[in-house]
Amino acid sequence: MTRNQIQRVDADNIPGATRRLYARASVIALLGNLGLLVGKGVAAWVSGSSAVYADAANSASDLAYSLLMGAGLWLSLRPPDAGHPHGHRRIEPMVSVVIGLAMSVAGVEAGRRAMESWRAGQSPLVTIWPVAILIGSALVKGGMYLGVRRVARAVGSPALGASARDNLSDTVSSAVALVGLLSSRLWPAADPVAGFAVTAWILSGAWQVLRQSVHQLSGGGASPELHRSVVEAALSASGVLGTDRVIIEYSGPQVYVDIHVRMDRRATLDEVHRASHAVREAVQALQDVDHVFVHVEPANAGSQDESGD
Image (cartoon, rainbow, N blue to C red; front, side):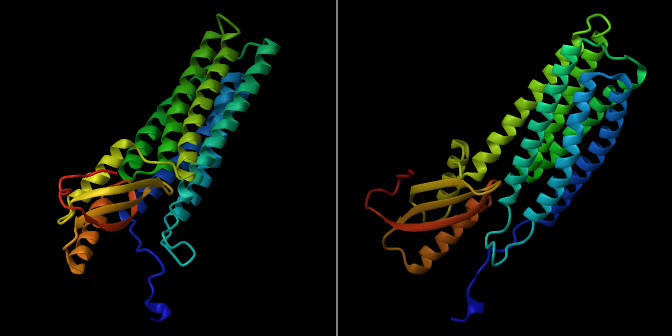
């Protein structure tokens, strides 16, 4: 067998529509965060509000991760090659980690600024400009959240899901910052208190993003629901009598499945071959599954109705 006859890489199974959706979400994140950073930065400078400053710092981190997210997602969608025979999708949860870290930095900076304002005891300047910016920010981020979440669900992307979660966090942060800014006219401490609330919300969202990303990067197991779906898909293949060992672990945003199926020991090699391919196709048709490794074992007499893992 010559070297060219050896299959060294997987087929590129990422649809063109998925690539376009990724690009659309990246553009939404980049342009939206750039515009919000400029507006919030001006509002924070005019008002001197720690809550508005915290919100602006969050937008700065959002812009930074938007650039990294676009580059990372582009790399993750590259087709398989000899160096990465199953493709580059593992890059995507690394992008999610970057988003989570950026959110963490923004949360720490927001908390630092709120603490400085608390100690100084200064009241922010409440004018129409920062109020309008915060209202506009909440509306824009709310729209970005809905748009990116829709794309994330359509393509099953954890990185875009993290980006959508961050947009939701920003929507809430802007609303809290607005309440703190307006309330400071009656209670000066309301502004730094709002800054602390923004900090807590940002860090909570960062923890959720990092936990999911590390779970995927470290080869974490799949949910019981996905496990059941995999077994049901395998049993739907003609000739399969049951399942034995089923191992499902994340390898990037999707899972790898290692499954042992049972067939009649009298089945011919051709029948076994067709059944193994049918199992692989049925399981890989599930949205969360990237690749399937199928092992066929002979079934014992009387075990035709058994299935397990």
